[in-house]
Length: 226
Image (tube, rainbow, N blue to C red; front, side):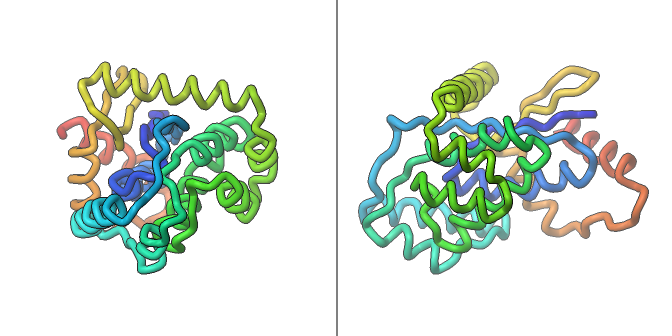
């Protein structure tokens, strides 16, 4: 099985824009791992000027990928109380990977919908914990809520690994996907992922049962040619 490791910032609009490609990979039989890159010392308040910068970038993401950014999300940005703090969601990503690795894709989707569609502040620890419980990831929520020191250390190590992988391939930041299989590994940059997301919008999803292996092979071949 080829493993697709998604290197991303949990609050990044471009990472949200690339996530349909990751979901397509999961449907086509790829294993999915999440590798977040957000640190607590990078948190900053979202003032009016910063909110407008974020929103203008997210509009570009929407134009390229079709991913929705709602009025509720813009209200969150303009509310004056939110912080751009990826660390709570980073802790949650690692907690899910340790307790329910089979639910990583479901958690990524729930996290992104909570923020970009429902306008919930996923830079807030209690909000992240609540979203975990809403989708039944109670053990992960307990770890996040307790500030478990082993979890904190593991999250820091994961961030360092993700950043090292990006630097190794000369990439400034996420999103990126590291494909690892029998034939070695290859890192796909944000440019490749967004281009695939755009192409995917115009292509009907395969629905025939029993064809996942063939679709996975063709999808892998598409990336090999990118």
